[in-house]
Length: 265
Image (spheres, one colour):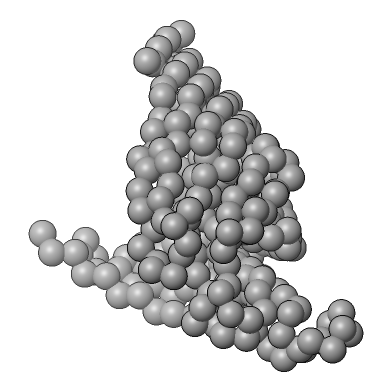
């Protein structure tokens, strides 16, 4: 169900209420216990309210949202044999209830005909209530906490400048810390990266650009895996294979490139 109200040709307000659904299914890993072979459907109720403003020099959109979740589907991980990375696997399981709510704001300003600036900011709060799941007939209890990969804030600021057939763009993207996984409590670090792009429109069909991503070569982690892989004795109990350790997957480092585009008409 959705409602749209136009105050005038520049201002619009909208409200929507919807019911979401994720179907249940079967985990294909044959090593899973019978308890973890299947997972149940997830249902949710969503509410959105927003305001849009548009004129020749600016576009603004603000959106507030809330989601109530039941029987939440989570992507969990486990390891059957310590020290054996091939026994590390992911599977889908159900948690209890939870919610997401937040605010998104997008602003684009065109102060001059050949200049565009924009700002995108998002705020997010999540919660998954305490739940239990089974691993190899062992009951694991997780306390209430935020969902994985759900930073409290994200942002993007950018500028695009045109000069005849040339253009230049720059933007900064960033996000807050977040949990790497619903299976453990390891947390990332906040980060931001900067990107640049310089282009030239040769004619109506041909465009060439030089670009740089993450130009300050920021080292930042995007995924985190927590399991026992190395023979280390962190707890000094004499067992080399019972200690789990965080292993990180990093985002793209400094990248430079040249792009050639030809449009066939």
